Length: 210
Image: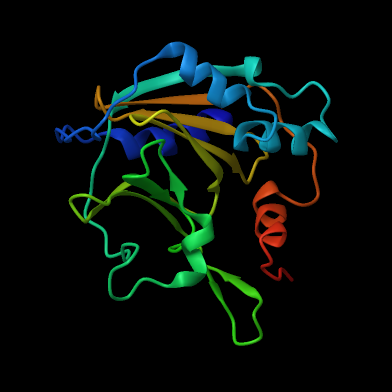
């Protein structure tokens, strides 16, 4: 089943389109390390949540499975500060260091019901938005068996998605927009948990979950 999960995800990264890298690229390794080591970082929140029931779960357990070109596709997801953008999702956008690009992995995936409770779509689209060019592009698409739970940036040009799966096998994808590459990592762990991280993430932001 692990190999099956990997093959499905690998299909997402098959496009050769050449991107225009985000501006003001920061390639400093030391600064990137500082970002990921912050005690309140998205990465540590995600790891610590699952470590509460899986003490041995750690980033060192992730193994590189695939390196591919980034697949950029068209998207209809509305852009921040443009007509059609739903302000509900603004707190969930993940900005790079310069605040000129952001990731949106929420607005395609869930919506608010009339009573304020979150309803979920079967699929999830991950979108990169360039605020200077006012352009949005899809960089990943997941079906119901896989989902992105968290994301963060290393400086301006590298974005990391942290995800989980129906089989409770976590994954990590690292997008380098300067090099036009995406690296897919899969954990050696099969986690134990009752409530996935993404639901806790929404609840902490004031979204009601059934």
